[in-house]
Amino acid sequence: MIIMEDSLDQFIEAGKLGSKIREESRRLIIVDESLLDIAETIEQMIMEEGAKPAFPVNLSINEIAAHYTPESECNLFLKESDLIKVDIGVELNGGLADTAYSMDLSGKKQKLIESTEQALGSAINFMKAGIKVGDIGGIIEDKIKSYGFNPISNLTGHLIKTNDLHAGVEIPNVRSKNSYQLKVGEIFAVEPFATTGEGYVSDMEQVEIFGLYAPNQIRMRQSRRILQYALDNYGMLPFAERWIRKQFNSKILVNTALREMLASQVIKGYPVLREKSGGVVAQTEHTVLIEEDHVKILTK
Image (cartoon, rainbow, N blue to C red):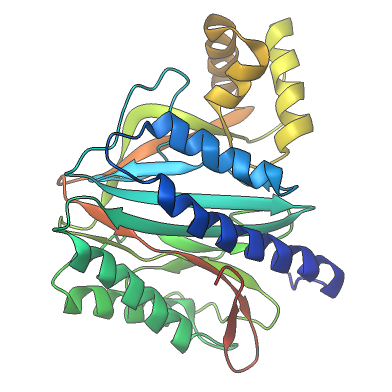
């Protein structure tokens, strides 16, 4: 699917907002700051611009690679030893932007972050219409390995469509045989992940982020209320348990409803992802528009 010109304007505006919020959010990343306060402040910054979060702000620390957003009663604070990944999504009238950066509070892991920044830059310089996504993965892999680190093989970038953050086509972070060729007008999130570990993530038990999956019957009246609220406010985009809890003001009610909806496969959960060997992980991400001879960075 090629983004139509009128819709493209929304992606461009979402990208500008994503870039602005990303840069403004850096001032929040300081030692002893509350993770919950950071996430809610960034989400409020997005809404104050007239947009919505495309997903709950991810604040993944050290060996946690992705999908961690603070829970309602989170009492975690940033420490001097932390490397944090800040992953931000913006939705504006169906247009989406996805961007991320890493910050090293220890002052000892900057080279790891640099490997993802350079890998992202190399991938973007290589990308244009007709390029195979598997070859982009090779560019990312080679750059990260040149720094002495490993790319994460089971995390990928992704095609973005209107109101659809993960639209099927993936851009790997390692060389692959995927022969899908980029097309003019497509929009992708490109997000190299590098680690000091073996380069593979696994699911943790903790799940704080959910998304609608398929229509199905659910029994409890309160569950139906919460489902309708999620449909009306988030559509097919991911949402946080704490967002629902803030609206319905009951931990037991919300948790019971989410369990029923998961069991009925009405929603799916996005488990927190941890680097399997416990290696520290860095991430850098931009959203780009594919053009004939190059790409345009929408979140620059």
